[in-house]
Length: 245
Image 1 (cartoon, rainbow, N blue to C red):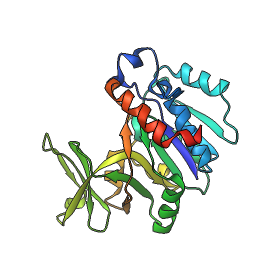
Image 2: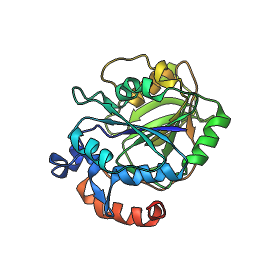
Image 3: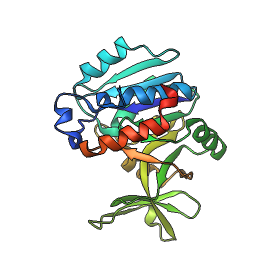
């Protein structure tokens, strides 16, 4: 499998840290978030990784140039001129992700104990264009899946905003997206939108035509999105990531 890391965002929730440091370079347990993720990807047998950059991009590029990762072919997708959001970023990188292998897509500020190889095996057996890791956790915004595990909607439980796929009216199960997904090599070319757009809205649009499935496996997870979570992130890395160091 190949991988794409979404590392272009401004990290506004991590301010003031990200006023001078891109979120990919925020250190946890003595290493930047990006480094921990690349080490885990290496251990999972991934060899080709595309990383998109925008905010303080020179710091990310400088780090990659000065820290070669043995066995990894690292490719930068430069969004310095315009931040394209996650869907637009994936579409821009389509030419860099060509091939027959599935693509693991991972937000740089997410930590988890998800087994990437197991994820790939499940994805290949399912033979669907996209599979989204999701779990039951306390958050307002949730994806909706049918009893068969297929994406059929999205809801903001605080505002009441609700998107249904094809006006789906059956039983739904709500889970929060984990910021980790697996897509077929052809998926980036299936995206209909252009310019700046999100990955999840694009998936909701495509779910009206193709099967987009939930990756149904328990996993520990942490969004390192706020300064007050950095201490918890240190503990998480110590528990799950030190084996990759």
